[in-house]
Image (cartoon, rainbow, N blue to C red; front, side, top):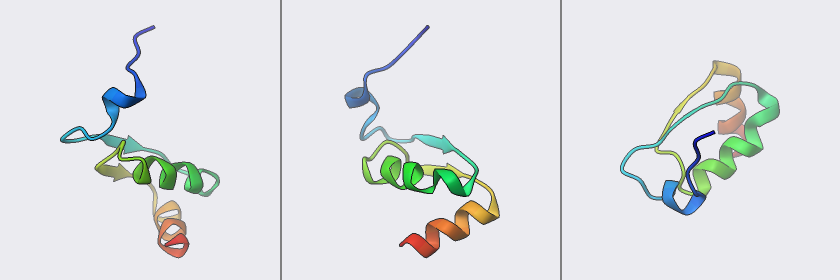
Length: 54
Protein backbone atom coordinates (compact mmCIF):
# COMPACT_ATOMS: atom_id res chain seq x y z
CA UNK A 1 0.00 0.00 0.00
CA UNK A 2 1.20 3.49 -0.85
CA UNK A 3 0.04 6.34 1.35
CA UNK A 4 0.54 10.01 1.97
CA UNK A 5 0.25 11.85 5.27
CA UNK A 6 -2.74 14.16 5.67
CA UNK A 7 -0.51 17.16 6.26
CA UNK A 8 1.23 16.46 2.94
CA UNK A 9 -2.13 16.49 1.13
CA UNK A 10 -3.39 19.77 2.58
CA UNK A 11 -2.82 22.98 0.62
CA UNK A 12 -1.61 21.40 -2.62
CA UNK A 13 -2.00 23.37 -5.84
CA UNK A 14 -4.63 20.91 -7.03
CA UNK A 15 -6.50 18.11 -5.32
CA UNK A 16 -9.31 16.18 -6.99
CA UNK A 17 -12.10 14.64 -4.91
CA UNK A 18 -14.44 12.21 -6.63
CA UNK A 19 -17.40 11.16 -4.53
CA UNK A 20 -21.05 10.48 -5.22
CA UNK A 21 -23.98 9.88 -2.90
CA UNK A 22 -26.01 12.10 -0.62
CA UNK A 23 -24.84 9.98 2.32
CA UNK A 24 -21.34 11.39 1.74
CA UNK A 25 -22.22 15.09 1.82
CA UNK A 26 -20.79 15.74 5.29
CA UNK A 27 -17.56 13.93 4.41
CA UNK A 28 -17.24 15.89 1.18
CA UNK A 29 -17.80 19.17 3.03
CA UNK A 30 -15.18 18.21 5.64
CA UNK A 31 -12.69 17.43 2.88
CA UNK A 32 -13.31 20.81 1.28
CA UNK A 33 -13.14 22.70 4.57
CA UNK A 34 -9.91 20.91 5.49
CA UNK A 35 -8.20 22.15 2.34
CA UNK A 36 -7.65 18.67 0.91
CA UNK A 37 -9.44 19.22 -2.42
CA UNK A 38 -9.63 22.08 -4.89
CA UNK A 39 -11.92 20.31 -7.36
CA UNK A 40 -14.93 18.04 -6.95
CA UNK A 41 -16.49 15.55 -9.38
CA UNK A 42 -19.89 14.31 -8.22
CA UNK A 43 -23.45 13.62 -9.34
CA UNK A 44 -26.25 16.19 -9.55
CA UNK A 45 -28.08 14.95 -6.44
CA UNK A 46 -24.96 15.19 -4.30
CA UNK A 47 -24.15 18.63 -5.71
CA UNK A 48 -27.66 19.84 -4.84
CA UNK A 49 -27.32 18.44 -1.31
CA UNK A 50 -24.00 20.28 -0.90
CA UNK A 51 -25.61 23.52 -2.03
CA UNK A 52 -28.49 23.00 0.41
CA UNK A 53 -25.97 22.42 3.20
CA UNK A 54 -24.20 25.75 2.55
